[in-house]
Length: 244
Image (cartoon, rainbow, N blue to C red):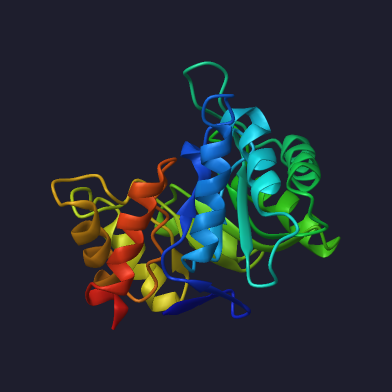
């Protein structure tokens, strides 16, 4: 049960959102064990960001999984900083380049398979933001480009500059405000990576099964730092309707 991102990146249709992994002394060993167990259970797509724990989340993921198995896809993001409790879009081209370089170093990669614009900065033309990512593609530092929390119009504008292979918007059984974006992604063959996929009233396994059945382009990325939650989530694709 896989999805082909960008035409050349096969990933298991249940990914892993690494944001909840904790690098604190009391949780680091457990978080590393969870990431490694995810691989054992078949997860091949791991999603992180430069702003998660100020880059510490990328370092933790690398500590857990490097050297990466050949089928592992690491997706990261830049374009939003997280000083304290605020999330602030920051899409200046020089900043995006700086953060991509730092992500390469922290993740111990020569090229990032999927680099996503974390948020569209309303103070910077979208063409400038995507243009910065396109230049890094041309340099071989980024393989594919994705977007997060975007409209159909923004997707199409970005696609005039470089192919967009994924969209990461908040979406779940209980939050379907991005239905039009999901439908657009399905028509265009773009991977749709819902974040907070378990929000709503359904139990975790039922929520994930619903998402997997909702559209063939959906690749949920539930996150957890607990082994029991990880294994429960993975049962959604081994025993639920999503396994068909």
